[in-house]
Each structure stands twice: as C-alpha cells, then as structure tokens.
Length: 355
Image (cartoon, rainbow, N blue to C red; front, side, top):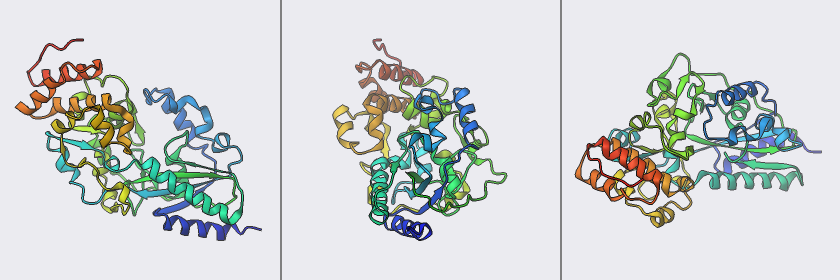
C-alpha cells in the first residue's frame, strides 16, 4: 500500500532535481475562484481570448476537465535570464525594443512541459499506472488559483502570483492526478497597502486591486489581440513590443526574484538589448529562423511588425526611424500598413500608403 506522505516527500525531491523551485499539492475545490472568473468573463474583460470562456466550468473544476482528478501537483520555475540588460534602462530608451523577460529565451511551454512529464513518469515508476495529465498554460486551467491554494504564493494586486522567495518571476505548471496526496496549506497575503503595480500600469489595465481588464493590458494588446491595436492605447504602449513587465518591476517582492539557472531561459538573439529599427528589418524568413523555439514565434510576423510599428511611432524622431517606417509603407498586410501610417503621422512624416 502506498504511503502518500512519503511519496509526496519523494515528489518534492524529484521536482527539485528537475529544477523546480517549489512543488506543492492542492485539492480540486476552486469554488472560491469560480464566481470571480464568471464575473470577469461577463464583463467582457477577456477581449478576444474566447478560449477563456469556451470550456465553461471545466476551468474551475479540474475533475470535470480530467475525470478522476483528486489532486493537483503545482510547481514553479524561475525564469529571470542571467546577464540581461536592465529592463528599466531599455524601457526608458525609446529607440530600443522592450521584450518581456520571460520571452527572451526558449519557449517556456516546451521546457516546463518536458520537466512535468519527467516528474509524472518518475511517479509512475514508483506507484505503477495512474491517471495524470500535465499542463503548462495550454489548457483551461486556473493556474494562479491552484498555485495559491497549494501554497506556492498569494495573488498580488496585479493578479499574478507572488512568492516571498521568488517574487513573481516564475512560470507555473500542473499535474492533474488521481493520487490522494496530502494537500499543502495556502500562504497568507503580503501586499499590505502597497499599490505600486496599479499606479505604474501604463494603460491603467489594473482597474482595482485584483482586477485586470485584459483589453487594456499591454501583454494582451501585443500578444493576444489579433487585429488593430486601439489608437487611444498606442501612445501608452511606448516601446513594449512583446508583453509588459512594469507591474512586476515595481513590486517590492521582486527584489527577491532569483536569476534562473536554466540555460534554456538565457537571452537569445540579443532580444534584451536591440533597437526597434533593427527588429523592423526582419523579414518573415528571418523572424521564423531567429524566433523558432521562442514563445514570440506564435504571434506571427504580421503582429510582430504591427507591434514594432507602434513602438517606432512612439520612438524619438530620427532619420533611421522614418526610413524604417517608410520602407514598410507598402507592406502586403493591411494591418501592418495601418500601424505604419499611424506611426509616420506621429512623426509628422505622413505618406500615401495604399489601403
């Protein structure tokens, strides 16, 4: 007969050997989080992210998504890349392109999913066949709610998970399982009266503590939104061309965020310190070649150019910026042309661009 307390201790040890900073266990009761999710969806704050509503209550009821699930093994893995240029230095240099630090290396989906699969198979080697399924931000899973319940941290006012030892600079992953493992206890909340994440948000997407209107969030606008970025929000985006880290950068708890030891998360292609003009010269083949295996690759070349055009529209006016924009004035994509036209107008250098 399996001793599940001993098994959990082994799982934590195996998880540490695989590089996870923490491994914890939650039960499947997310009844406290389900009403908040329903309200958020009812407000339409998920925007074009139809997948957030597509699976109904399966997102908040793990046993309905994966029948037989009794427990969720939750893990976290640090991602801050070593030797990356200071984020604020890049954000405050309008000629540079800022890319959220989680995306400057290899696609975390692949790294984390592989590690979780190894952990699940290690468990199977001890207990024999059992029911499980691994998840990494790729299915209807309430990752933060589950991680919070498992005691990996608490939900910050920016809606991300915070941890006293790791801030918020980590990825989350889960293994849904039918093993009746002992559950861990949630942590207490430690944000206090701090409002820095709300005050710093460039587009005021954090409308109140613990409430994020994704349609205004720069991460949503540059990654999830498929169409044109609303004109009123474009100037607020600045030079952030893929994601936004501002709410994390000002968080006092991220003073404790640790540099990742994972080689896969090291910066690739100089994405921590590159100009908007340089990135705008990448054709589709260059984009595909340099960003293969990157989380950025999934938005595609067209949206990549859309985002950079907005950044160039907000950049200090220079001959190089104007020339780069004009070079794409006849881009085959109407979406790109629209944002190029807007950017040129911002510099008082409009041109006739075909529609």
